[in-house]
Length: 330
Image (cartoon, rainbow, N blue to C red):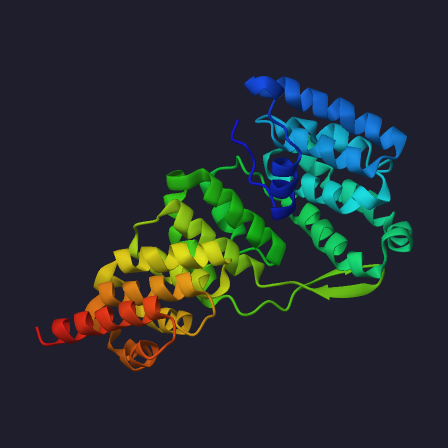
């Protein structure tokens, strides 16, 4: 079974929990998942939020993690309030790979968690409410997406009316890799036509705006499914401007590898030259040089960079300007 993609919180917890066995001996993953479920139930009974999170980490680190969802769902009323957000996040992470019966129970699971929201606010404060609302929306949406469904079915969900379903479908396609190549055009369509999100999640009568998640998910899926396909150039340009720093740097490097075929990404690369991340600036400069004469619009900005105090950036900008001028002369 393919290990489900983890949210940022889940990854942090897995890494922080020290799930690897002592003395260098790795225990069998199914056994570790079983241990995690036993520990989770015990921690819920003890009301120990920290122990609940450690147990969730054990479950998430297992290849058969989705099989734990039934146990998690049956104890949703027992989870200590301080662990309610990571618990909800974990359920959302597992749902696309869960058995049909578990995915069918996603609405009931979300309703159970929502019923605890007032107590959650009293104990954890209103500042934590948007995060819980966001994860609840993910639970609803991911319950509708079967990560093992035929590619054609997931492709249809890329155009769903519900933003979080579109996001979950893109994530599921990304996990399928090259198998999902037939869905590339649908992902490109979502990436290029999606307007900035005006969606929201609602909890306790309050509305919380959602970020532009479907486009991020579509861009990441395109990179995962068709990394060398020219149709992924737009995805790289999007991640360069809107992704996390590691994604932006990887996008700049990849765009340079496309050479002149990445000309449509020149505006995004020029934008990157104004960021405060030196490594990203350097990689964007190099990429512009690799694109060649089609990157002529970057020349004024590169000339500005030559006078920068950062000598490394100035040197790379000088070399790239020389490269572009030489290429322009033929």
